[in-house]
Length: 545
Image 1 (cartoon, rainbow, N blue to C red):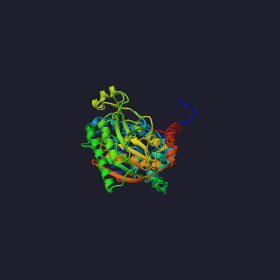
Image 2 (image 1 turned 120 degrees about the horizontal axis):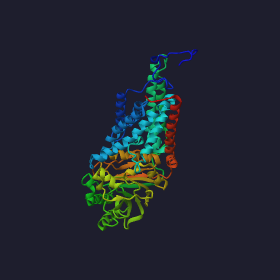
Image 3 (image 1 turned 90 degrees about the vertical axis):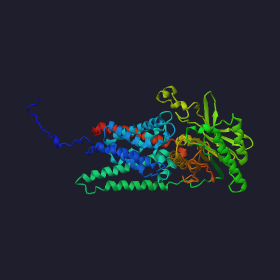
Image 4 (image 1 turned 135 degrees about the vertical axis):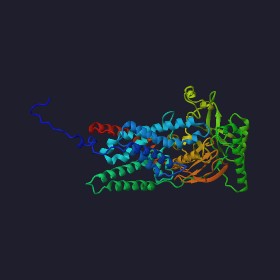
């Protein structure tokens, strides 16, 4: 009941903007069909930024498209749009996982990885009021949210799966040099911030143009473009070593190849071992004839001896033949039996001419791949697919960094997918590694996977200022300079031997010294951003449309 002296005011609801509760009176989000198209386009743009396509400028575009699609949306819609982006990215990016194992592992892995981008979609929708209230922070907010998402994806579940990090698609970008300052997390932040600049510039320029009283509608676009130029130009100004500063070492990579690609390559274990032995003996003949430089060290790839040479006398004799013929140590990728019943180890083992295996210079892979090298929750996993029974023996993880000391150089050895994990590579450099070595086996994958892996090696070389190499059973193998340049890259599914003189490095980059700190800071800022967005929402009643 209205008091007699009260004044009644009638409000025309049609005259009140539907978004008046927002702090800037901004318009509603993009129409959902448009947002869906942008989300799918975002995933495809991110995809082609990675090898084998390598169109790295499209990575910021993909980030911008996802940010635009999710801006001011409800959280559920943000999750769905992020999931679409994740599927469009990861399903084709990880298609090499289904070549020989069927569709189920590929589908499950793609869905899992897309789930993390769904979380990112929720986060970007959640922080919309913060970006609306303080538009200048939008690029930085975008950057820290991507780093936070990757930090989570790189570690969960079962140790995480870092494939598809934004940084790994920047192997030919000016931003790659930032790895020497803050590692892969800083590169990811820069790429995502560039995407944030793109979306902020376009979004706020369109808003200014719609405002009839604003004659300088082009200012936001111009400002964002200028910052983008400074960002990428600044990347080129970051100093990196173009070559080592220490002594030189001549290294040979032996890519022995396999009789047939596929999971049954290890059913041809003796043939694979013979390929590497014979190729090394042939190299020794060329050295003796003076047609090849004499190496100080030979590197064989992962799985070059799936026959345990410490227990099998025939394998022992064959590897010794190769080492004695070339006259220098060989880093052998071997599968060793034990230590327990039904267990094996994936190892990099130094084999010396004349004396054989040096058990003190032995690296055991620290991060076996779940469901490929060991099966967690095997009984439950078997209910999903009996393909897990292909893994008959679980690989046991090593505990020590891959620091292998040879007469020629101290090696930082990591095996296969370990190159994707920041800490595993850094531990070897902190332990004294002068040369980074990635032993890998790509016989169960394809050339796209091999090139994606080589891009990671390039980032690691720049990150730690070390020359590096990748030795694969089937390719791609090659050498990488401390500035990320690739030399002597081999073809795929072919036998090859490449020899190169490298100059070693002793010092440490800033990224090596600070380690995980940049990621901790940036991921921490992503959490602070989410909290800040909650405060803005509470104060202004900000709500996604």
